[in-house]
Length: 67
Image: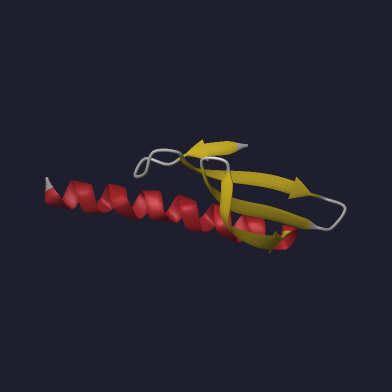
């Protein structure tokens, strides 16, 4: 799966599963060039999801406080 970045044209985040190795790989691409990778153990994925989810909740609270 690929998510398209909102800040730089051609930048994206790819997520690939490697169950044979027990890994999930996050990679940052600029057009057709891989710029960086982060290899996570499968056990780390729930923590990543938790971090992403809590960052959304946190930003919602900040926006409601500002309004």
